[in-house]
Length: 330
Image (tube, rainbow, N blue to C red; front, side, top):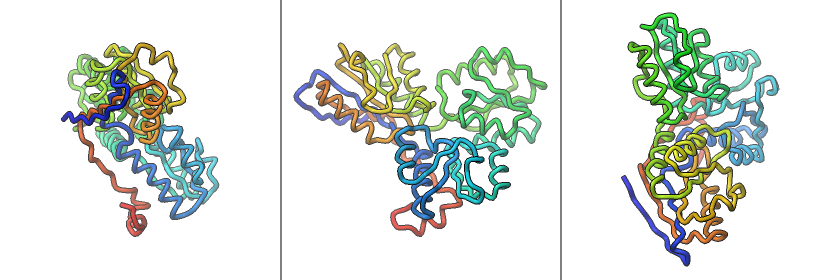
């Protein structure tokens, strides 16, 4: 689906193509709501293990509201309330939380939970699990923790040749939810070539929002001279948007906000496209649009909608019943 709305202004020769869908996905909305609702219900401080989502502005806003972000549970006082981030945790973290009598609220994205459950299921069946993802990413660490003795990480197609798996007839691959569709496809092709009997998940693990935003970038690349992606540097899905655009031959940059836009990027550029990663707030996009219009004369704006998104996730069990009784909370 492709819809366009056009707003004209005094500089029609400089145009912005604003991509849709962009910004928050359902898992991010849910995770942020979890922290805000917990603060409303229980008051500050509320502890959050790791960044609730990978966005500097979101984390700073929640920190100002009373959330305390920690890297490890050892930093949380015994018996306190702690939220697990949208990226998920390993069983070892859950065990530690129970041993320290922490009151846990689990904000893991349901699509990440899906991958965890797949890992558990295949481990029980005696499979080797090839996890396609980026090492040291919070999501990958959590997933590998479900089946550490039989999970093997692959980051690039060339890594497939280095695998040494015990039974070539009992192998399954799973993927991190925020990967590049193209790179993942190449890795899966390499896996299928080396292990013809390898199995995959019943439905792809890459999340709908990651896929939709990458498809939109591919669609707009032939129409623009520059892509600006609003998102933080540690946001995997945001970084993938930059990579997808650059592979199309169009320069692309990842910016936390308008302050990171460099004037030299815009020299000779008459058409710039803007999108936002799945953890980037819409107000940052709006500020960037105003900045480009007022400072650089981009006077025309076209919104290109590639696909409509209407996905919503329910709140975690720990909050669902209480939150439903609160006015204005779904």
